[in-house]
Length: 254
Image (cartoon, rainbow, N blue to C red; front, side, top):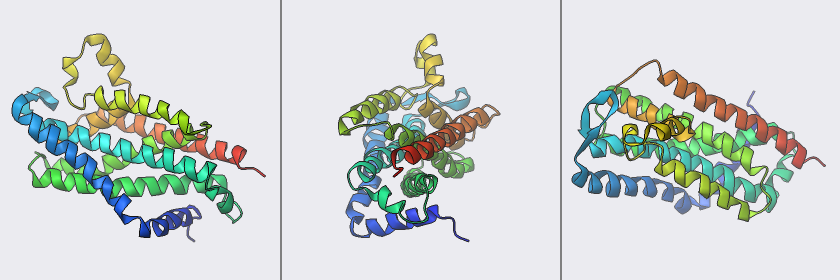
């Protein structure tokens, strides 16, 4: 028997049939970052210290970090702005709850759609990384499921936070959180370049878990510490999904 939340994903797929142009824009942004920062700036930077301590070309170093950041941005924006519009203004979820769907089904379906959309973007990004020679290990094939895990973590957290928002003004806080994560999660610079105290703060941030995971896989530098990154991201997504389901049940009750 098909799980009920699959109908929510099906609804979103059908809704985007006539919005394919918007869907395609998700491919452009990370590739532009990769071309401008990874390849353009990389020609000026040269080499930096990569996983395992070896010196690697800057474009190879920054590409996995950009993949992690793309997974974060794609999932967050779909489960915050789009989710809030459906909940607050379009009343899409009210209509869904008039069917056998429950609040948890809605939350799972919206998260599943965000994850599916983010996976397509991540797969395209990883394909171009391979074409440009920015992967140095066959372990890089696992960068795709790692990106899905990053998307799951941030989708759950974003959806949970959105249930507490009152208006679009509150989304300024989303941007205030994402920009520092994007810039200061070892995405563009090795962690060793930061002061010791700042390094420990960065190690605790969610995007750093994804960047460390993607970079280790891209270079084939595997260790037991990667399990910590995986558990962190999985717990973040599960807790966020649980909170979102509980909050929707309270907010949308008749």
